[in-house]
Length: 181
Image (tube, rainbow, N blue to C red; front, side, top):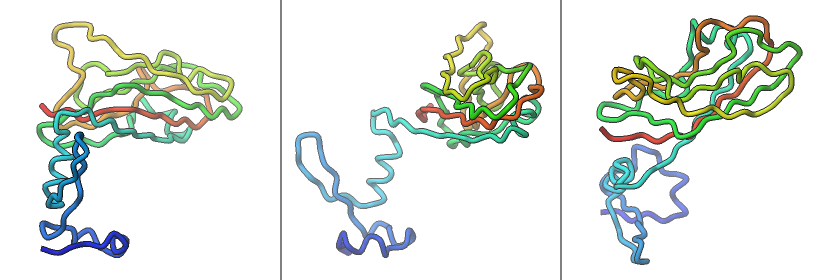
């Protein structure tokens, strides 16, 4: 059982943080408890009944936007067996250059292997000024539609086909949570 001086934390390597080290956990009633570091990490990772919100963003160069239907890009990697990614909100920042995207301008946030997107942004790429726009939650259309899939990455893609023209970089941002199945 080793004690850690808070001033030494910057010098510890990740491999040194094992069961011999303790963290301080603050309870809702104000009590503090000494907890084995690995147990504290496991408890935090299990969500312990709370919703742990996470953010991710992906900047996509215009050359990649022009291929975003045929080559979707991962914005959140798969989170492991027994978990899935649920998108809560999303936006796109179009950094307008000189030419707007002409066709196929609807962006999707879709889980790999799903039949329908979680969020959809109609004409989000169709802009002739720099702006930030919001995706809309996509409603399930049939009883066989899938949106959230265990241990699958969340991707950004363009609906129906690759955009034409356009030379603006975009940044897609998502707020999501990892759910335990």
